[in-house]
Amino acid sequence: MHDLSPISTRTDHDSEKRILRYKNEHTNIKGNNMGNASDLFIEALEEEGVEYIFGIPGEENLAFLEALSKSKKIKLILTRHEQGAGFMAATYGRLTGKTGVCIATLGPGATNFFTAAAYAQLGGMPMMMITGQKPIKSSKQGRFQIIDIVDAMRPMTKFTHQIASGDNVASKVREAFRLAEEEKPGAVHLELPEDIAEEKTGTKPMKRSLNRRPSAETKAIKAAVSKLEKARSPILIIGAGANRKLTSKMLTELIEKTGIPFVTTQLGKGVIDERHPLFLGNAALSDGDFVHRAIQASDLIINVGHDVIEKPPFFMEEGGTEVIHVSFSPAEVDPVYFPQTEVIGDIANAIWQIKETINAQTRWDFKRILEIREAGEKHVAEGKDDDRFPIYPQRLVAALRSTVPSDGIISLDNGVYKIWFARNYKAHTPNSVLLDNALATMGAGLPAAMASRLVYPEKKIVAVCGDGGFMMNSQEIETAIRLKMQMVVIILRDDAYGMIRWKQANMGLTDWGLTYDNPDFVKYIESYGGVGHRVKNSAELESLLNKCLNTDGFHLIDCPVDYSENDQILNNDIKELSRKV
Ligand SMILES: Cc1ncc(C[n+]2csc(CCOP(=O)(O)OP(=O)(O)O)c2C)c(N)n1
Ligand SMILES: [Mg+2]
Image 1 (cartoon, rainbow, N blue to C red):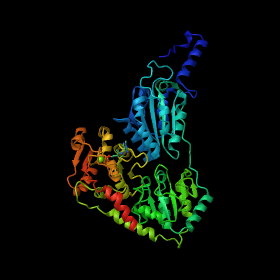
Image 2 (cartoon, rainbow, N blue to C red; image 1 turned 120 degrees about the horizontal axis):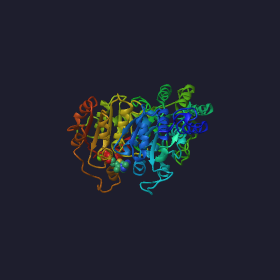
Image 3 (cartoon, rainbow, N blue to C red; image 1 turned 30 degrees about the horizontal axis):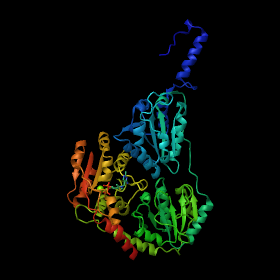
Image 4 (tube, rainbow, N blue to C red; image 1 turned 135 degrees about the vertical axis):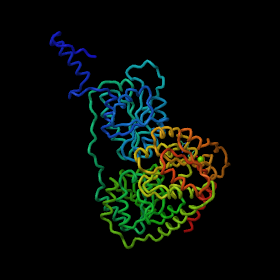
C-alpha cells in the first residue's frame, strides 16, 4: 500500500510530491481511478457492445482474463480448440454485423486461429482476434513459443497490430473495430503482450461515431435505370454483399414492381425468399445448370453485391451480355468481369433509388427465362420422396426443408452435400443457410451452429456435417453441452471424404485413398452426455428431426448417406437436361 500518513509529520513540500506521485499512478487527469491496460481493453470492448469472447486463454492472457472476470457485460465462452472459437466469433459477426471477438495465447494458440481468420476474411465476417505475447520490454525466456504472429496474420486480416503501450489500447481497439466492420467486413488482430497487459494507463475507451454509408449518386442510378428500361430480358443476380446488410426488403420490392426474375449465389442465398415465383435457382454448380441457361437467355445482368471470392455464375466476354454492378465498392478489374455500368454505394439505398425511378416495360420479355425456370424447378423436385436407404441427398434436403421452420438456421460444414443444399434447399429468410462458399473450409459447421444458438436462443438450428468435417471440430460438443445449448447435428456418414471422391470419379481416376472408418457416433455423443440417434430408413428422418428440434439437449443424428449417383446427376444429367430446354 502507498504511504499516505498524515501531512503534519512531513514537510508540505514532501507531502505534495508524494500525493502527486500517488495521483499519477492511480488516477488520470479527470480524477478517475487508474486501471491497467487489460481493464481498459475490456472497457473498450464493452463500449463496442461486445457480448462474448470465445477462446482459450494462456498464461500471457491472465491479466486480460482477470479484467474479463470483472465484466458484467461480456461472457467468456471457453472452447476446446482455438479454431472452434474463431469460427464462432466469425459467425457471430456474420449474423449480427457486429465484430465477434476471440482470444488465444501466443504461438500455438495464435497459429490455431489462422483458418478461422481466413474464414472470416474471405467470408466478409467482422471478427477480432486478441492474442498474447511474452513481455516485449524485457524477457528472459529466449524465443520459447515466440512466433511473429502479427506478421503471420497479415495475409489473413485487414489489420494486425502489436499494442506496445497501455495508452494505445483504446484507439487501437476502436480502429480495429472500425476496420473489421467497414465494407467488406473481415478479420482484425491485436496482440497484447504480457507486460503491456499489466501496464497502468489513465486513458478511456473511445466512442463509436455515428456513421452512415455513402449513397449511390443520382446520375449512376439514372444510367442504370435507362439501361434496364432499354433491355429486353434483364435478370438480377444476388450475391454475398447483398446478404450482409438489410437489402432484402428493397430487393423484394424491386422484383415485385418490375417482375424481373432473379438468381442467388451461394452466399446470396436467402436475401429474397427463394419460394418466390421469379426465383430462377441458386448457382450451386459452376456451370451447366438450369440457372446458367437462364442467365444466358438474358440480355442484361444486374449483379448485386458481387464478391470476387465467389466465382460468378457467368463469364463476361467482349460484345456479350452487359452488366450493371451494384455494390458497396467498385468492381475489381478482371478479364471475365468488367461491368459497363457501376452503381456504387449502400446497396439497399441504391436498389430503393432504382425501384423508385424505374418503370416496368411492356417490351420486357421473360418468357424464355421462365420456361427454363420451370424445367429447373421440376428437376429440383426430383427424388424428394426417394425411399432408398442409405438416404439419397435429394430426400435428405427435402426432409430438412420440411422440418426446419422458415426462420430456422441450417449450418453447413463443407462437403459434397453443400451443393445439394445450395441447389435444392429453398432459403426463406436471410442468413438462414450458413454455408461457406468463400474459404470453403471443413470444420466450421458445428461451431457456426453454436454461435447461431447464442445469437438466437429461440430459433431451430441444425448443423449439417459430413463425417469428415464433423470430426475436425467435434470436441466443441463438450463446450455446447457445458453451456446447455439445445443443438441438433446431423452427420452424413459415407465413411469417406465424399466431395473429393466425387471429383476423383469425375476426372476418371481410380477410386483410391479417400475412405476411412468412423467411431460409433451414437456412443461418441453419449460419452459427452448428449443424445444419439441412428437413422434406419429414409422415411423416419423427418419425424426424428422434428423430435430432436423440439427436445432439449444436444442431439446427434448418425445418418448413412448414398452418394453413388452424385457423379451421374451433378456432372452429367443436369448439363444434358438443361441443354435440352
Ligand atoms: C480444412 C479442409 N481440409 C480439406 C478440404 C478439402 N475438402 C473439401 S471437401 C472434403 C471432403 C469432405 O468430407 P466430408 O466432411 O465427409 O463430407 P462429404 O463430402 O463426404 O459429404 C475435403 C477433404 C477443405 N475444404 N477444408
Ligand atoms: Mg464424408
